[in-house]
Length: 114
Image (cartoon, rainbow, N blue to C red; front, side):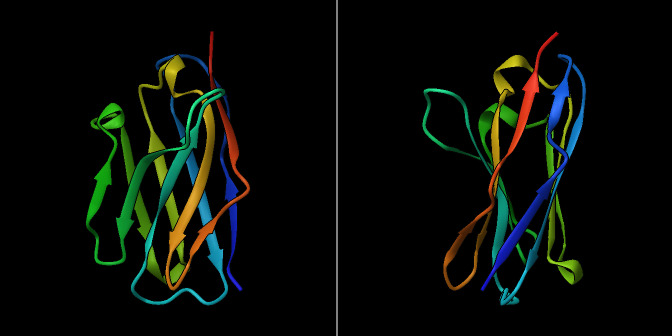
């Protein structure tokens, strides 16, 4: 069974930065995809950024140039560095892992407000 432990959310002013972390435990296959989705109030969950175990990345257009995804395969941990945050980035951010199945974290709140 796979468990995902997220950390790093919080309240930040516009233009600020946050770093999210997600550590996966359990049966994570060596070939997998790890990343982040988000869901704002009244909106559907959307992809933010994902990265394969081989290093390929995919970003939402809205975060390109501001967010950076990275991972430590030895620790089964994925990170999301979020810079130049905007109020429209406010959402619950969910860690995601695709291995044999899809797994989701509990979510961490990110609020961008002055």
